[in-house]
Image 1 (cartoon, rainbow, N blue to C red):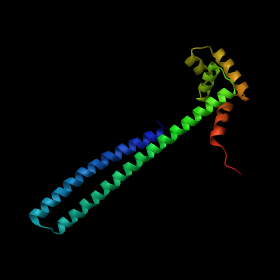
Image 2 (cartoon, one colour; image 1 turned 60 degrees about the horizontal axis):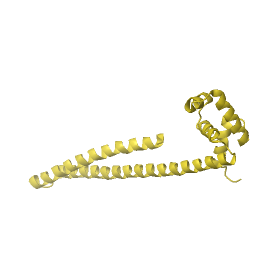
Image 3 (cartoon, rainbow, N blue to C red; image 1 turned 180 degrees about the vertical axis):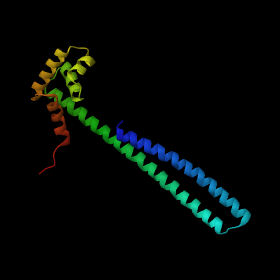
Image 4 (cartoon, rainbow, N blue to C red; image 1 turned 30 degrees about the vertical axis):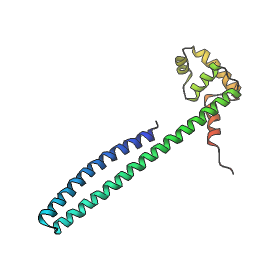
Length: 165
């Protein structure tokens, strides 16, 4: 889950709590208003109280709509991220096959794409740093690049694409 999605979820939860409290207050004020009207009749004081209760009711409705919008935005973001992840995974699979990477080279290349350095990759794979360095050199040669940033750039260029001139 992205930071943006987590932020949206926190906002939605906070606003939901606020809306629930407003709804409780609105129900209390409306019940009190009805009781006062039945006992005392409708006067200026109760007219002001009725406007305040109505304003609170409008705030409850608007808050609920905002929560609904935040949830819809979060769902759209999650769907877009899932599509992008699938597209990137497919692109990686295709390029690795095109470059005829071995399973070990593909594993090392994937860690490199994720931003891991040689020591991290060696630790994660349980192999020597020299082995990882040699595998990365073969990956770079097969891809026609000379660095980890070049590997990352290859995929970003395909995914981002520049607008037509």
